[in-house]
Image (cartoon, rainbow, N blue to C red; front, side, top):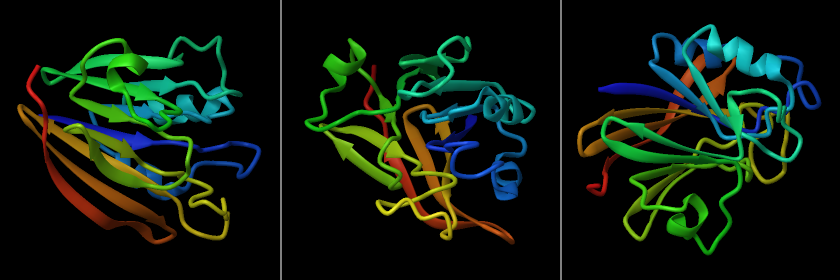
Length: 179
């Protein structure tokens, strides 16, 4: 089993100075962290990398020279191809966007957390860890996700990053398409 943290749209330092402490509480002991873009500063990835290795999708203002950041990552994790991107606009076409079949997509950009499936492919958006929702309000706690990959299934939990620690908002058990 692989334990993965999902985070996106941190916008540091333009919207907030540092990641909320609840991120580090939630991500303690993970095997991997996937950041779905709008990082802004490489120091965010450096902080997360103190917890676990990091892959990041680049948004329009992200540190392109950082080896951890690519426009699109295609990762083989627990026997599944996982696509990591910042923006994955409808109509969703994983085959075209990632140039191949996928088992799971992790995306960001909207700041709105969601767990959905299109054509049998789970699409996970952790929302924004710092300025969540369509209004991008900084006075509302952000979100992050935990993803446990184990063979043909995935358990995903959406957390709200409360000042007193992370709290589960939604949980789903997903069946992943076979490769």
